[in-house]
Image 1 (tube, helix red, strand yellow):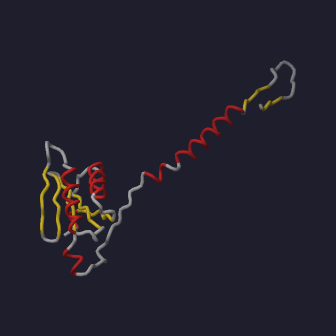
Image 2 (cartoon, helix red, strand yellow; image 1 turned 120 degrees about the vertical axis):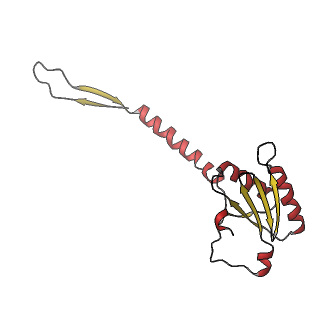
Image 3 (cartoon, one colour; image 1 turned 180 degrees about the vertical axis):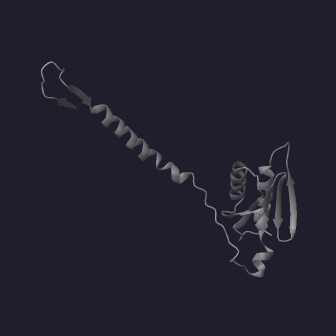
Length: 154
């Protein structure tokens, strides 16, 4: 399949006769459409479900007492349950996600009906650290996450 353009013949001038092949363009467009359709599925698998609870929401006194938070800061984690705080410092210069997950699993064993947990982040915490923290929290049995700024959490 091709397109040909024939021009009028004029004395000494050259004929204008160009040929444009459309088959390679159609092949390229077909490949691009197939690629976009295949990769469209992966955009839904890489989504993180996080909810933000605003200042307008208020809980009961029981919910406030059982509030569970994980504070992510520059020196590690702080696990906050009600009024109790348990620091989980760095191990060899890195965040200890395994210790966080094991402590959260212990909490889940004592509070089996609890499914929500807040992750509080200080400024300057990398996105990779937050995603790994969310993975540790979800693996411990807390699927309902809220992500908040640590400055606005108190």
